[in-house]
Length: 401
Image 1: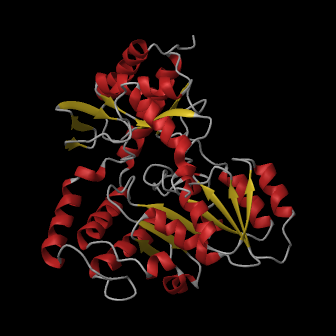
Image 2 (image 1 turned 90 degrees about the vertical axis):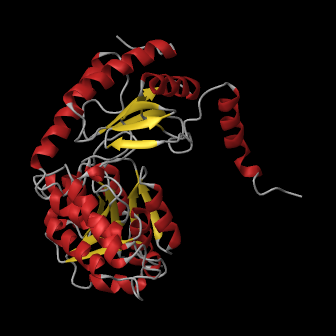
């Protein structure tokens, strides 16, 4: 009899081979205590966190924590219902109001996760006879949202304006079209040329979605994302985002100025058929979002730290995913899976946590992914760089010179 797990055997073999070599498991690390946005305890030792996506360091903000505690006491631990039934509390409305103010848009819709926000929007907005045009490197949640719907899917080469234009020209002129872009691509931290891509999409008569999950909080004058920095705010139809990065909690959202937007509350299955976020979570999110509107100093510090770490790792001989710091994500390329695991383990031994990207996420590319936080001090950034150099020596990683 066939075993339905057989199709996963190559991945199982790869993982078991990694573990058989005596390496520490990079995918089941337990953080015993979180001390701050930049520090945790692992195996009884304090480590510096450089792989959490906690870009703006809001997880320990006193106002955010106080808002969550107050909501927990006043509204209880959960809603036990969908947003369209009993699951919309005062806090959900306040969170959506905070999003409307932050993005200066007319409509906002909060989902239980960022993944579900993409799942809901993509599956609802384009159906049979319509087209979704997306970057080949789009996030899994975007691809899965496309798979849920019945639209025709057209992929274009990563960040290629020319290929996007070519693909759009092949689509019937009168067909409905949705172009899906990301401000920052999370694998290597590169940004999309949104100004040019949005222009091409609009010329073809397409609606545009920009996922700003990894850009909210620190791109643009108001921290709205790459689309704000690119000056295309009035041309983007939908912005998707998450609370699990810069906002510092969990949840997802879509914002828009489209006058018919609210019908999505009845047609997005991941919104209609999922229990809503707990009151404490939306209270934390609303407070965090409102504080991010005025976090200019934090934004400036995060950019300075990211540029410094990127430049110094390159100067030390590390091969990075981008030629310069395009975001707060710094992806360090490894020669192969074995040395990626060795380097990750050596960094843990040095007291630094980074993400070792699972092999199925970036086929043919082995990455250790760093993400800096606005709460990393200058001294911590210097220490991270020094520990990277020591870990490379310990792991026997050849560095280019």
